Length: 172
View 1 (cartoon, rainbow, N blue to C red):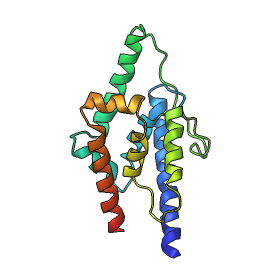
View 2 (view 1 turned 90 degrees about the vertical axis):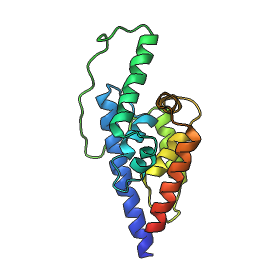
View 3 (view 1 turned 45 degrees about the vertical axis):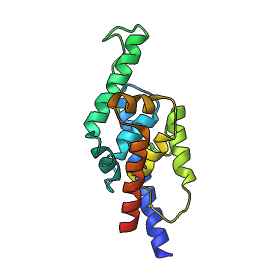
View 4 (view 1 turned 120 degrees about the vertical axis):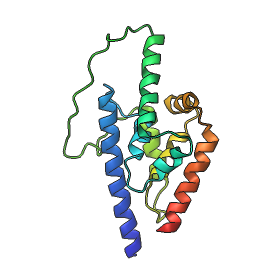
């Protein structure tokens, strides 16, 4: 029972870090909603290290992923005919008492949170690799395009994330 409570507390702490960091990442891009790509970036901040380790085998770190996201949005704007510099400046980053409780999320961001909630009370705490797996469930959208742009096969990242998650859970 004590282990279950400890794992639940660990999961809540991970969710807090995940949601707060994802919101900051979205706002830094000038976006009003958190998307799956922002949760991927935020997963790098979780202390378990499984997200970092999952991407390491593809020579991608947090900054490399952030740069790929920025390229994606710049290319999307260019394809839509927007001129560089025509966009308004990024939204100011504001902190509320609990931004993750009422997190403004896009459809892809809500899907990640729903997939993480489906993990349910398995007794295993949430880790960064779980976030990757939740984001990989989408077959269309920003995340699959990011992976393609980075040359990362979806199945290979999924295998790396599952391996990291299982090893981390076994070490607890």
